[in-house]
Image (tube, rainbow, N blue to C red; front, side, top):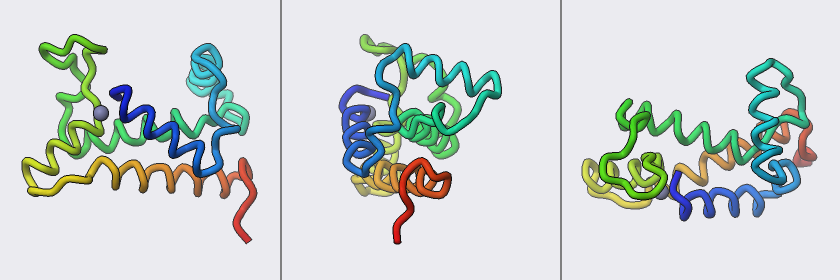
Length: 126
Ligand SMILES: [Zn+2]
């Protein structure tokens, strides 16, 4: 994910009240991923920011195609495709409409928030 979209995603996670659940740093995030891979899944390992990132990447692959898994030709940055930039570009190209990336960010962060509430990571709404 590109830095501008990562920044928007992180801000939305924090603004929706999930800031206390995200990894404090890269080392913490890495350890949480290792815990999940090893099957040590418990509330303290859940990171709504990483969950949203993976969700968006998976949705973009389903929508746009497997090319997103490869190196982006000619990219001088991370060399990776940004799923949100690709979805935004596809929306303009194929639907003649902008704003898909914002819609995906809103929907994805709402889903992650619901997950946190349903799994008692955050207080449920009364
Ligand atoms: Zn992007």
